[in-house]
Image 1 (cartoon, rainbow, N blue to C red):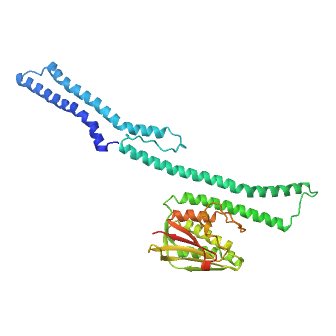
Image 2 (cartoon, helix red, strand yellow; image 1 turned 135 degrees about the horizontal axis):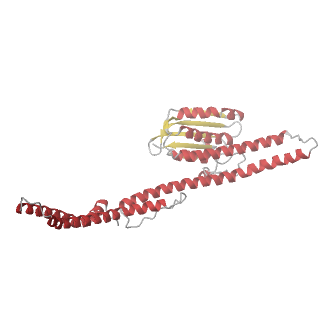
Image 3 (cartoon, rainbow, N blue to C red; image 1 turned 30 degrees about the vertical axis):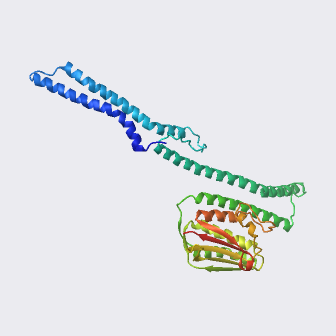
Length: 357
């Protein structure tokens, strides 16, 4: 076990006590010798030879003190030098923890542990980036390949035609448009997920967010989608405020509301609510919830809803499986919890975002 800093300094300086005392005694002896010579022969200059002999012990003690001070400083700084050399010798991609020996001084251990925590966070960021790249490549490969094969087929047909042109039925053009929209949506959500992961680690940009105003703004952006399906899209909003990234919270609410509108059948009902309520812990909490009367999700599937690219069994609605995963990332970054339950009378889905203190 390493010694505390003050005890370690005392252990380093204690051996120098003897040379210091010797230097003091040599200086006293030098002063006495010069004074004695002056007392014996006031008219004569002091004998340089005798003074030299008196100075010699002082010089020896001074030299010994310098050597011991150098050794003490070297011993005290050596753990820091070794730590600096260890870090400097690493490549930028080497994020392994720095090994800390049990006998390492306490102050050096504290620095090494701080560096290890920094390396761990950097390693997590690197892993997240690698997962994102792998997910993006995997998810984009299939729709892009389908689009390319379709366009290649049409290109070959046009090249073999006498007039170098072809006529496509509306249904094929519509399928191509749908495929390109799905690919664009997937690319946008992957980019949104990447932005979420990078933004949540930054304290800058947080502000006091008016949740009621935010819900009203998000609801307005979905009015056309709800009208196209003849949905009863309602808002029940009370004043509430939280601290966070406004654009991320907007993304969260929009993703949950988009899911509800997509999965609610024609002529159904979707309601967005927000405000403050008493939590099970008897504390007032800000909440946002979206309720629909769609097909709902089996209770056993709730835990998987926030997994990336997960889509429930039998799902026919177009989607990427990223909406709730993004919402979960944002919720956790704001100290909030995303909860799932069945809607009113056991129908549909109720998604609740409950903020902390």
